[in-house]
Amino acid sequence: MQTHSPKEITQLLVAWGEGDRAALEELAPLVHAELRRLAHHYMGRERPGHTLQTSALINEAYIRLIDWKDVRWQNRAHFFAVAAQFMRRTLVDFARERHYLKRGGDALQVTLGEAADFSVQRDADLVALDEALIALAEVDRRKAQVVEMRFFGGLSVEEVAEVLGVSKETVMRDWRLAKVWLLKEIDNTGNK
Image (tube, rainbow, N blue to C red; front, side, top):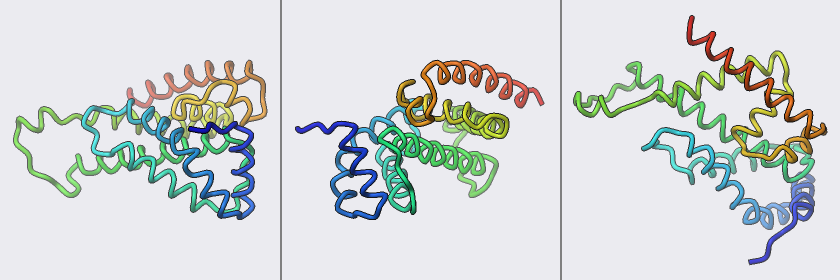
């Protein structure tokens, strides 16, 4: 199996962004493994028995990426940061829908034993984190992007620094401060 350098992938992304459909066809199999890794990373944080499959999450992100028009890809890391954002949005939307269903929307009858095994805590945690991340973005957009890329996307400090055009030290400082801010925000929201 031939491996492709980040530079080759970046060149294909730029060509695709400029409208070259052949570049997209060549790029798709090259990024699939990394999209699978991202999706697996996301799904690993979800509750056991989650009804959304890894392949469905990949497909949803891929469809959103393909449909995104007039994008100017900076590099490979930028592409995967955006893919991570689309996966996060898909999971949060899914969690919100489950919460809606839990509250009686489209009610499903289950036995008491089945209900005892049914847990939506991780869905609620994901929604709370998403809301806190949105609030952080209003205060400091870059810190929110760092969290999104590191926590949700699994990008390295170096990749985040490259995407944001800042130093690795800045990424680490933003990462530490954002984690404290988010914990405080989630705690404050939970106590209301």
